Image (cartoon, rainbow, N blue to C red; front, side, top):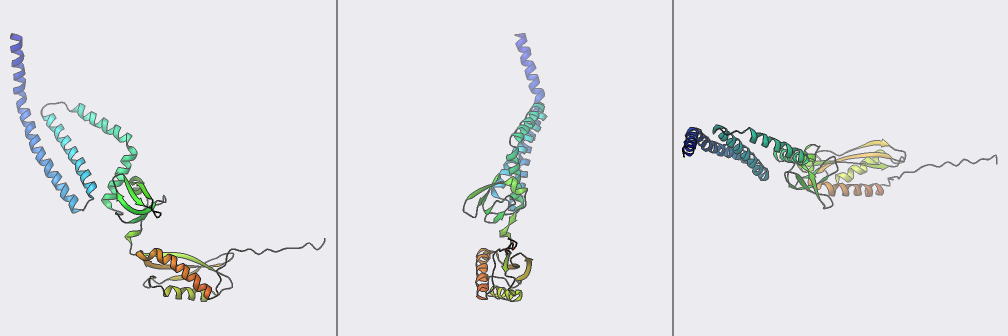
Length: 275
């Protein structure tokens, strides 16, 4: 009985000794929870002000909330006299192991965050990158960007690749230039050919006049004189103009009897008269 009574007294003494620390810990927990809510509210308003993507907004808020509460709990535990070294080491080890296992996914995640933050493109834009991937952006997720390719196929491009490469955004412009080459025969008059092409372009209202078309000799090939043509058009008219302008120039040159030659070689036959 004496041992039991002594044990109870020791336990009560320990509880009474720890009460101040427990009280301080509970106060820190209460005040800390209020501060965390204020911080999250402030961050949420900043996200809304910057018009951050909803998917990224919710994901970042959940991460920040988790980190803040973990730090708060560690602080409270340390205040109450609980050893937190083991928990901190466990969290660090788990974070390192997860980071190594998901290295590729984390790269894509970081790329997705950068894309959603800086917005080099948005849903509906037509983009391409040096890897040969191109299409209209259908959806931007944290790991992958979904594109609809020119042939209608759905392409899933890793965000890490997109964020670390040169992205061409065709939808971020109002007008676009098209360069193409037309070869004419060496027997043709260059000035007349240029006038024919110029008149053909002038008849097409989609070819912009504020950026005057340019026609010049680009190269003297084996079989042709190459004329390079540079024209500008509105982005929405680009593809139709590209196809129809080339067709109209071919028809106009045919009507003017200006030959568009094909590759040819002169063959010289030398006879041996000694036989």
